[in-house]
Length: 161
Image 1 (cartoon, rainbow, N blue to C red):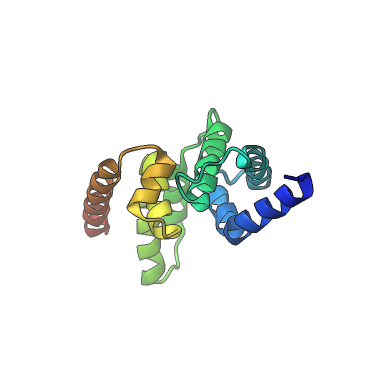
Image 2 (image 1 turned 60 degrees about the vertical axis):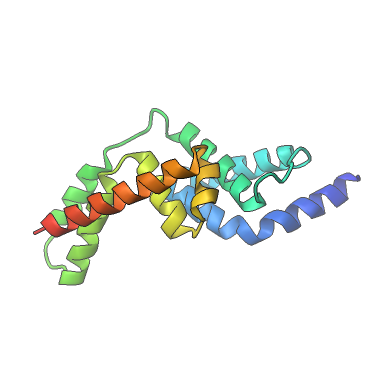
């Protein structure tokens, strides 16, 4: 197959997912989202000929992006809880904004893998099966983690002042 034809096939296949993919990367690696986005697409382009479609292309792209984000974040992790606490100290927010901040603080207190799971399911609309494929864990693990996370977040929100 010609290089130009392969490029057209690749571009057509990934085009529907590029916006969401960039948003996913921006949420998980806010320092360098453009670079990681380019690295993700480059890795996908390099692996496209070998892509066997065992999972959907969207799942495959997000899996690549997740790995690129994790690579970028290693050694650069910063305590997002402190930022959320500082934001919480600012006064003058309406009650709805305070609730959103409480939820944001509760989410920021989660481990990276837990935040990623919530983002994939609720932010990007992946099914539990697709999220399991992206995270490289069994679907049952995704289900139990979601159950635990929902319960924990609900309890934290009920305890918030």
